[in-house]
Image (cartoon, rainbow, N blue to C red; front, side, top):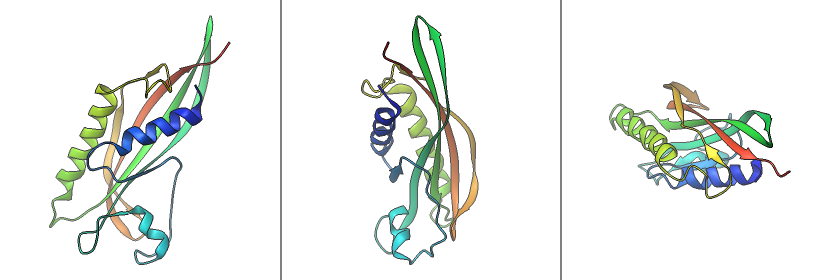
Length: 152
């Protein structure tokens, strides 16, 4: 087990949730305009139905605890973004997507396919609006702690 294995397994898991766009394993930011070639990586769909839809995550800390074996707890924060459109009622779409992500993290394989000993229950402390580059978006933060047992 390692954070690299956890990172890959978590990316695969999140991308499998219906409605989830691209999932990045590191934080991405852009000052590009929507029409810039570099902005395409954040967009889902084809014109005229394109919208921003992606998630990114990072490890914010890790702590080792020794009780016979060494347990390493990784605190991971997932940031999700989805274009806001009143006409398309994206508020409900995004709320449903965040619930689907939380339900999958809680109810699915909590070992991430053996990449960790246990993934603790998710917490969604923030669902709000923000800007990503020039796009007004729904945004959410999902926090999880993933525990691995280090080799002796």
